[in-house]
Image (tube, rainbow, N blue to C red; front, side):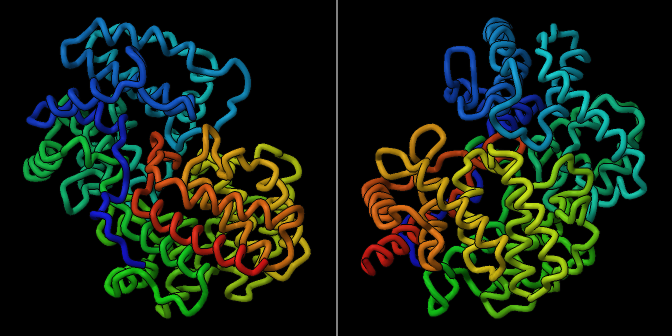
Length: 493
């Protein structure tokens, strides 16, 4: 797939990471603080209204950054806004991966510096307590310092103020080749602050590389991770295939070769950052990577290598120590298991997905803010699995997508976006192709095509990491594939 657009960074800027990188003394501080001031949502808040988790963490991190920069008045106004951001009842949006731990860490940074702390509302305190328990369990785990399995490096903020962690060993275990901790700017910054707080001896060369990494950061390119090349490659190939088997893979051969090679990591898990990373791979990326490698004619390991990730009820966890399984991780595992003809492992996944969709009507993936992503992927994947449960799941997702189409022909939780419309349209096209779309599918697809053809792709942060982010190159791929799919389906009617 050709594009005349200039190359995009894999990930959109992360407000949280920019804020905490500004806490490290160095040339990057002033540009990061300036960026924060320029990207406030209101006079005293940061983040998006799409997710209270994002708004709360972004505002708190920005407040800490401003106080550190000698601006206590705007920091106090941001603190005062925090209690009103949390919902009174159950959260209407998914929780980010490390929300409770990051809020807890910001509290500890403030306490260490003698700053006043905000009064966190009960829903926030409950999540903080839950994350403390998970961190303590992780810390007692024999593989805590093993970067092939442990997500501790990505969560290195939790080391701040925790004397039970051997920080010198942690640095040696989780420092990546570029000097960072687990290719995470935020984790790198807060871990360096803890190293500077401690009187213990650290490898001077390692600390120097960590500082150099942070000093070289530019706000516009500070994502929640440095890069995710395998994510971009796998999802691009996977969605490009929706245009038919005659379509050649749109990625460079070396990208596909590297993807296939890294799928055979001894841990059995594919890390989206690539070789040398000190953040472990995950089940969702591994499943999508294996599907993409197979599509591209590259070697891929069997799904049985992921048996260690199977939890209760036959569902796959995305990471070890994960609180709750993810819907889309299991949708993609179903696609891989079906591709391999492994029906013994496939059936429990289908049963779990069916149970989840009947018992939990919210149907939002924990890794993505929009239900259009989960529903689109459910419709797309399940349309091609020859099993009654899969057909039922496809039909249910298609019906909900048709019902939630916006008046402008797109989809979106807060107004239509190209990414959400593309997921929905691609899923509905696959369902319609297999006779599972139901309703007035022709009108729905025509309206979707009308939206896509009249709206340029917006790079809207919808994925959930530490805060919301956008996989920027993927949005253009999705938009193009959805345009061509809906155009072809409409031409058949």
